Structures are given as structure tokens and as C-alpha cells.
Image 1 (cartoon, rainbow, N blue to C red):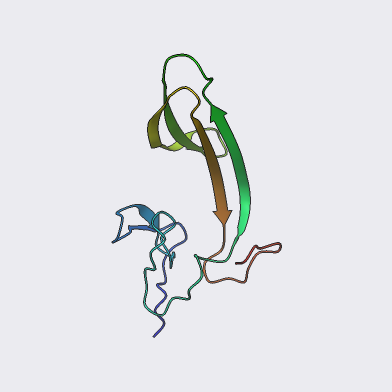
Image 2: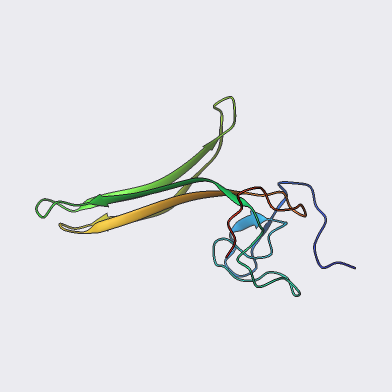
Length: 121
């Protein structure tokens, strides 16, 4: 019997380490990076491709009041309807502080061959 679960695409479960909601097909939690199954390979997760990656940085000027910030992630379907909304983090920036942010969306088909152009390693 294979240690890989057979489930419907998009089925979710809770990571036993960090309690994040993750895909049931995941072998490594994308949030805490813990391995989830015995016999899983030592890679960082399913083989796929990065469909979207956005990097950005904000910098507080050397003078002025502190800034507060909220990192909000909103996912919409093809009709523009909100599917989910999540506050990923909050914080404060004092004068001269910098913060960088990266949003990455990886896509893959569980149990299938890698997509063309897949990054590995």
C-alpha cells in the first residue's frame, strides 16, 4: 500500500505541526516546512511550477511617525467573487525600517509528471 493518500483535488487538512490549512496531497507543509509522511522524499514539496511570483519592498523615510501595516491576501475566482481573505501578518515600521514581501503561487497536479518548465531544487 502506498503512503500517498488518494483524495479529491483541492481537499484540505490541518498540518499537525503548525495547524495551518494545507492541501491533503502535500508531503511537506508549505508554512512550517515539516515533512508530513513517513517515506516522503526529502524535497520541499510537490513538483510543480511557479505560476506567479511577486517581490516588493517598502521603506519608511528617515523621519516621521511609525507606520503600521497589514499584509492581506485575497483570492478571487474567474467571476471576480471573493473565495477567501486572510490577514497574513501585521507589524510596525519605524523611521528607516525596511520590509520586503514575496507572494508565490505554485501549481501542480498531484501524482502527475512535472509541468514543463518546472523548477527543482
